[in-house]
Image 1 (cartoon, rainbow, N blue to C red):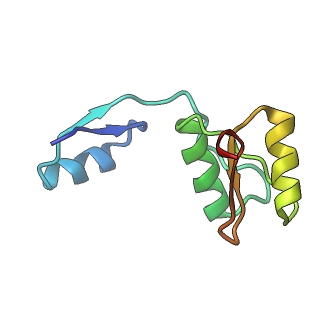
Image 2: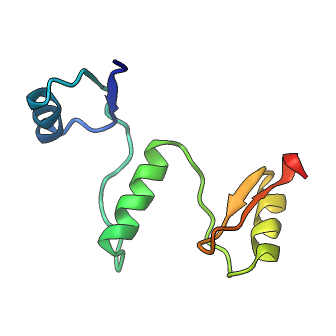
Length: 92
């Protein structure tokens, strides 16, 4: 079985994985896990998870043209929006 990678030094997470007998490695990230003002809990969790995974996020207006604009401006090749549309610039 593949080890889980914990990007947090939380002893609670380590304890939970140990209780289930799951192998894991701990490699805490340098990401500051502090909520910014007026940030909701779900937004905080998403932001920290994406930062730890080194996945960039750009919030754009609704519409494929805005997603395309963001992709082109940042040199990215894949993007999407909540409606389920996925754009891939390297597959068109």
